Image 1 (cartoon, rainbow, N blue to C red):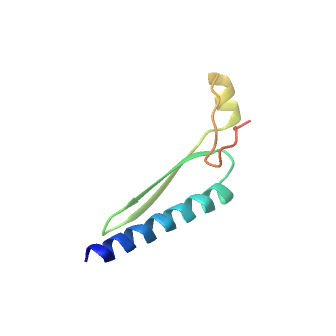
Image 2 (tube, rainbow, N blue to C red):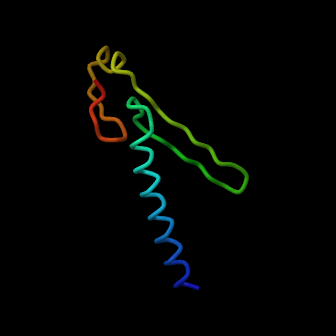
Length: 71
């Protein structure tokens, strides 16, 4: 059973890394974070975006989830 758990954990970790790469490619360039909540009843997907104008007016520099500066 422990071996199956290790294999499953490794597979889940690999899929999460794949999801991270897909999100970095396809989310809008203003996306700064993605939160995913999963339980037996629901899957909730929430994103946060920051517009360049907002950041400039607040004197803030920030990178998006792809690691690029929001300009």
